[in-house]
Length: 126
Image 1 (spheres, rainbow, N blue to C red):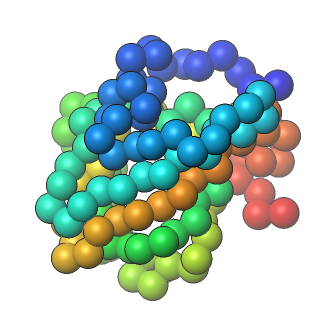
Image 2: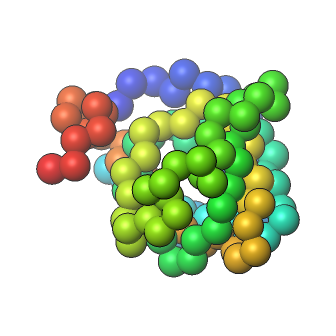
Image 3: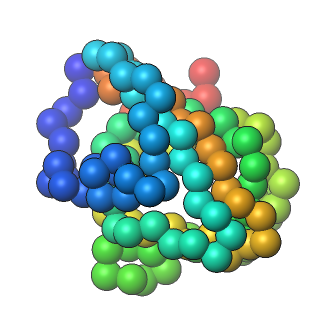
């Protein structure tokens, strides 16, 4: 089973950033979100409490900042994110905002795994 949510419920992506996250499906095992961040847009600070597979529908450069505004990831500095594969793995994400700094919209379907095995929790690709 998943561990209790370490972050406040009001920071959940669907609550804190509803203009960017839409619930497509949810049950006891998974939650599927449609995430859209238009070019030039920035999300409010929010969390993703479960690890997820991300299916990329359209890609754009982005900057992820922590809750205090410090840059924690600039995709433009990661060569593998210049042309990402169609699907990626993401760990659970603590409070952060994401700014689309590219020319295209960022559109991702995420399948959040609520009951991750120890291998999934550590980021295994198997």
